[in-house]
Length: 129
Image (cartoon, rainbow, N blue to C red; front, top):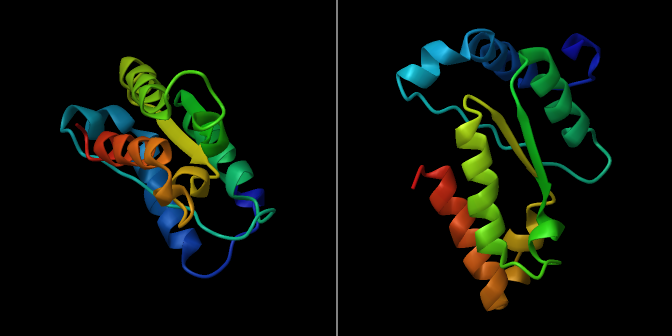
């Protein structure tokens, strides 16, 4: 199915490498090999569809959140980030996708202490802390 997604440039090479990883994730997970991909581009270019397709093809649990969800909640964004990664770890190996990360990482978001704390929590989780 992922071959039906329209991609450009060197993305196919990266995708093939990622699919090798996802073909046997426990082999990498047990060795604590971390693999991450940052998808960037303007809205409407298929980043979310691409991520969902990869997760489905791999059979891995898909943990999804939108950056806006971390700012529109009673619970702190940092707590929600930590909760999301806790779920991902309990279901590891898993596929974590944060859509619209600019809501917590964009230039304007850095001026807001709550959003900055949320972004710092995301970075800490990505670093494995």
